[in-house]
Length: 377
Ligand SMILES: *Cc1c(COP(=O)(O)O)cnc(C)c1O
View (cartoon, rainbow, N blue to C red):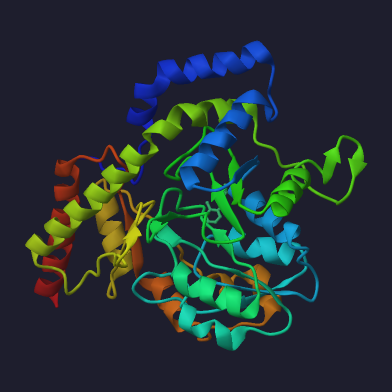
């Protein structure tokens, strides 16, 4: 049996006639940059997230950069964030000449440990940027309390969390700006790069819209120095075909996560593998299903690969220890939970079309590996 980490072929095959028709509409109108399909998608995304605005851009990485630019973040400014995320979370800060201030993560959710944030706030703190890692929201109620008390805006890195909720409120609607990605492996993936930002404030939304087109509201008149960061018409058309299916896909991921839970507990190996923890009052959309293996993660991963099971490590090097961020001045041991997670976590296949028999095969392989190991110990 083969169990790839992600397989989009079934999803795309089912939608192929609709996708081809949608791409044809773009060809017919020549609306290749932004255009009608993107404008319609933006309305639909705002409705989906519950926000006043949704603004398409060229990638999730750019969404983060544009959000930082909307708050004029630059040299001398600090942004508080997590060291355990995708690279772009922090490159958005350093690209603008600002300084990332890292706060360690909670060992159970892998999200920023909100209890440690206030000690890191200074008069230079310009934003707090939590990441909803793997599809589960950071503690946004507590983050909003800090944001209001200190009058520091929140920017959500919701790239992995479209449709995730806390207390019934969707990701992107719990901060000043929400940042999303349409990278193909996200729950709502395009057929190329793409992203969007959400906002409720009129002025911020207007600025974000200008910043994505070189900082101009009126063509050839530039109020700010922005980026060329537009969503293209083909992506807009494809994503409009996919969006109506998103909740069903995310619910299937959640059902697969629950099935793993049952299978792992029936296998009796819960002591050696820690399963994902779901906070109360959240909707976890399981962009990734990540387990913790305190002993022998890399050997287990190689064993699973031999059995045809795809896995990945998100992320093997925490951001404060990346070579390019050496200048920020952190060293090994500074953020112990992020460093431990980097050594112990393993992402398993969780995509919506994954079959129960494939999940049984994955858990059986775990059991075999752990039994062999205890026999040889
Ligand atoms: C995917 C991702 C991004 C970047 O999105 P791109 O569209 O690939 O640029 C940023 N942050 C996180 C947490 C992500 O998972």
